[in-house]
Image (cartoon, rainbow, N blue to C red):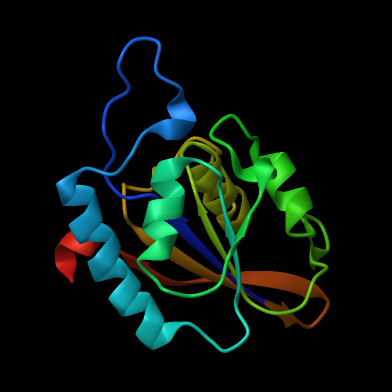
Length: 158
């Protein structure tokens, strides 16, 4: 199973009293989303399931890809890595229990915490930059699940 983690692109800073979920992408963020979406469109496998946070900035990021996606409340900014892993049916001991590739469009810190856990690092040691993608793959090696880091790409380098 491939797990692709895409952090939303650069977004406006919330003004006092503004709902965090309504924050929109900046012009820089819109450009980042378009660049990363073009790269992803060339590389995503067929049948990838795209799950997106209901936050406006993540939906704007995902829309740049121009593919069908599902908004999932489990991906709001306050979600935990445990909640997100449960959503995609990924058991840390047994590996992924679901089939097929998944693209998550979401937020820090849970995206970085998921990457760190799966790669066996300290939970707060991975920070995924805005607009960036981390592509992980799980494969079975003899009797255990092995995680490969296939790609880390930032829209500023595309």
